[in-house]
Image: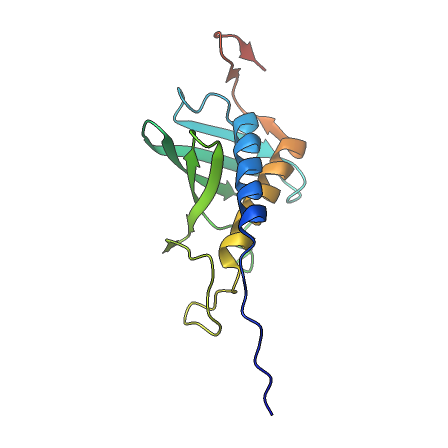
Length: 157
């Protein structure tokens, strides 16, 4: 008798907590996002020669901001490719979630397996955790490539 696999049930509380934490991390890395269109910084520790992380805002609305996060590396390693993340920031609820990566947009909270795109059942949760880990790593190991303008106009090196 074949045993039926248990259906994945998303943990919405944990997922929302991750998105809320990502919002806080993102504001620490990009405090002037309401006035500045892009932010770049270097990160040591991902590779030997360092890496550049670039955040670029594509759309601002009253309660939301859309940005992309790209990781650039001079080393050419065809087996390692950093995904380009599309992030939607909800300022009214102070949350930031990955809305897409590479050419995959509109991620579902649950996927049946197998599926044509080979997504895991918890793909959306995994990509938001990945984003959180990337932001945390950047906070710990990153360095600014340009002055940061804080509220009040003072530049912080």
